Image (cartoon, rainbow, N blue to C red):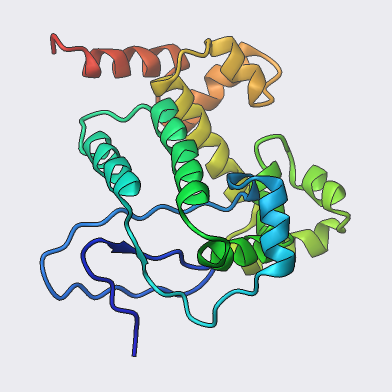
Length: 227
């Protein structure tokens, strides 16, 4: 048995729950995930948490006209050749407002309760702080773990060693900022903890095969309307 979602409906699914989707007809949908309780007004968030028990089964909710207009707009942005991160961030905040304004406490209770459980977890701690942390040792100290314990828990949850995961996140962040933001190379360099521009340049050449300046230049050439 499962939940049937018809046209004009959506579900708020609890974090970390297993989801399998079987489409019986040609279908199109938007999947959006978030893990931050700031999505809701704090007073309402705490009220739901204390006074509104979650349902045993999350039933589909009707897509109200305001949500329908929102989804149509988001779909057009997602189908565009290039997506502006700042625009999607704005649309995310708009979705929070629409959910809070047009749906009841009971309808929102499944996601509020799952957020509460998730934000006290090790995974949330990692995702919240990893951009500011420069080493595994620093991470372990912040969380009050021994380095050995931290590494063991991390690998059990993320399925890869902490250092490798942190390096992967660092590389993705650097590459994104070089390609899609107006941040200066110096800002990107020192914002990611490098001690000098030469060290940063060597890191980019080793990781991406080119210098920071050339990576940015190639991205501009590829996206130029004249090319």
